[in-house]
Image (cartoon, rainbow, N blue to C red):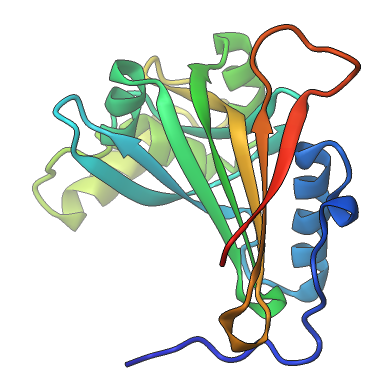
Length: 215
């Protein structure tokens, strides 16, 4: 049976104090550390959704913005994940950075971004990526690869410069109510620190509760 490599002595311990009071700030610091470590796609995260009949689904997407309001990613609203998030606006994401022996899990509610915010991001994408977003019936069957290439070339010829924002494409923002930090340790005695958003009015600045979990 396959087993991940032992983290070894370089993997330090993790205490709640190491993360500070705000898990989103801590997530940003871990993301920056992953970039500095040479991880090939540190912004890649597994996005899990649930269908209307309760079937779980997961796929990889890219984090495009991280701020106090949450985690932002973009997709076709007509894709499977787009429909699932509209039917049940709940999601979970997982980051995994093997070289650092770290993972982060975030769970919470999801909202669509405004069209203005989606357009602002769309216009920063490479021309080819915008064309692909415009012509692709994401998650739907297509005749073959040649059809995709013909559609892409024809659309690019019609829009050599500015590509209009597709009506069914845009962003979602995940507002986490739980964020868990996982640090690999020797003998699988890993560190897991979970932040949970407090319900009700904020008192004395305590927005998050913190607890250690068994590995």
